[in-house]
Image (cartoon, rainbow, N blue to C red; front, side):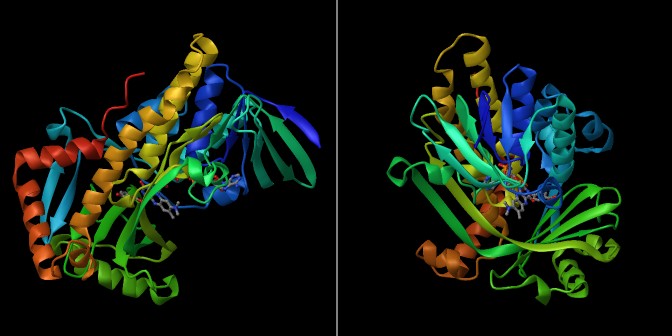
Amino acid sequence: MQSIKTNVAIIGAGPSGLLLGQLLAKQGIDNIIIERVAADYILGRIRAGILEQGLVDLLHEADVYQRMDEEGHVHDGFAISYYGKAYRIDLHELTEGKTVMCYGQTEVTRDLMAARKTSGLSTYYSSSNVTLHGIETAHPCVTFEQDGVSYKLECDYIAGCDGFHGVSRQSIPADKREEFERVYPFGWLGVLSDTPPVADELIYCKTERGFALASMRSSTRSRYYLQVPLSDKVEQWDDQRFWDELKLRLPPESAASLVTGPSIEKSIAPLRSFVCEPMQLGKLFLVGDAAHIVPPTGAKGLNLAASDVAILYRLLNKEYNENQANASQRYSELALSRVWQAERFSWWMSNMLHDFKDDAGKANNMDQKTFERFMKSELDFYLNSKAGQKVIAEQYVGLPYPEI
Ligand code: RFL
Ligand code: PHB
């Protein structure tokens, strides 16, 4: 067994782990990342596309922003199409100048990986049997194997940045955590294609046929989603069927100008709201998807991971560099208040824009027809009043990070 040492052992090289590692290193706090899969596998995942200003600022702080600033697109607004009628949410006007950045999670991850390599920080990709020990003691450690060699990593703290299916959350004994969960009765079928996007800004569509989203990665690459039954398989959706269905859900003027082409990625993702409380125990902190999941409707998953990182990194900086012992004990409390706000917004957007068949009516003790009327008038209210649009806009650009 080879022994290694660091300040912070980071489990997982997704955006949470890589960003935390980069920010800590900038403050002279040493860290090592242990990742289950290979770097190329991570870069093959197509996920989020919209970055809040808070994440953009954090990438600047981490000095990993050059390509994002050059290639990303600032979006001043987005549209909600409601049974064929499009309403524009003018983010810039409604939030006194705030905007969001369209730049893919895959590219953020690629940039962070490149920066980590340049910084000379260690990352153990393709590791197996990653196990956390002694999280409630003064001397935690992580054991793992890579290329047939066993390692023991001794550290001050462990940051569990290993996603929803990772090992970190499970390392907290069941009687010391509480989990809150809503699994939605449908999934999102996503397609990536090298075609120009149907509009300059995103369009979230509520229709009788279910939800659709027109998004993008660049002026030549589109990302589209359709709400589909959970039982559907990707193989049931050849490209033609996907484009035909999308046209039926887009507002008519967008459907008419839609450019179609071969898909370069196609996958179905389930939708879930999930929170684990607390987000820390002893020397272990849970960060990003390891602690919480939001349905993608509000574009909050990656952004919430970033605010966790910001909070944890600032608290650890106080401990290591500003002589404030135990500052990190406030992590869970500070992170959770923002987490629940984003959970609430993502849940609300999901309820508002999807077709729940008879599931939501039942859950609310009313027939589906009545439930639909309530939802319709709620969306009517929000979209037709400036105050309502402002409430949506303020949450979409991201609520402020807590003061630390
Ligand atoms: P990640 O990105 O899941 O990274 C976790 C990393 O940990 C590794 N890992 C382990 N490493 C060591 N030991 C173990 N035992 C490990 N188990 C797992 C994994 O291999 C992985 O590399 O979590 P992170 O960094 O917290 O980042 C969060 C974001 O990725 C996530 O919130 C968003 O991508 C959510 N999400 C979306 N959000 C959006 O805002 N818009 C989207 O369109 C969107 N699409 C998605 C998504 C999440 C998806 N997942 C998780 C299934 C689409 C999908 C398919
Ligand atoms: C995406 O481009 O993948 C995307 C954008 C906004 C969302 C969800 C996904 O709300």
